[in-house]
Length: 206
Image (tube, rainbow, N blue to C red; front, side, top):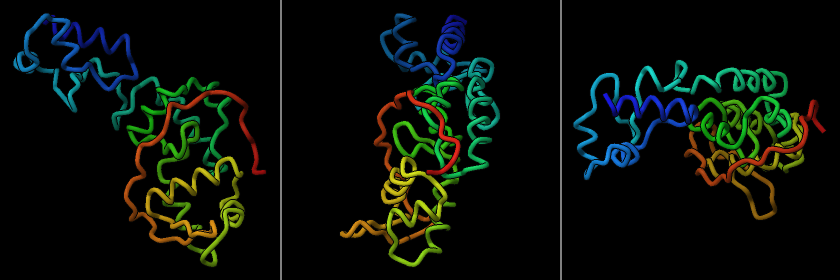
């Protein structure tokens, strides 16, 4: 009962957290071993990836996205519906309450695609971009990619670098690129720092 209270209180204090770490629960209960915490688990508590979650306190929407993020993420996706390859400006993200932690959480749940530390697109934007770029004469320049994607340099360069890491494109020594695969590359490594929130939203390509 005490463990359940702790997990529920942790979820209330940290609504974007994926759950309460098992070691944090062990320390709060004054137990000598984390395995004792596992023995205490009872419905509705479960351990997932080293975190204790409950159906009642997880605060998640269908698909696992934390409830407080569903509205802001939906707003970002609505923005991207008109210009799918123009990442919202930091000012727009701040307006929606999407700070570094919120963006990282949304990306972790697959609700947004984080192509750089402060740039997000729709989850399938990498595949869509790869299909468009595959239609260009190969190899192509960054400027040709930017024009084909109807985007800005602010988004185009990080997106191309993301596609390079994901194995969708291959950067050549002269800085041109070839499309190597579409939807078959390995996920890009999570090398992103926490996003900084500043600036204003861009409304059209430049």
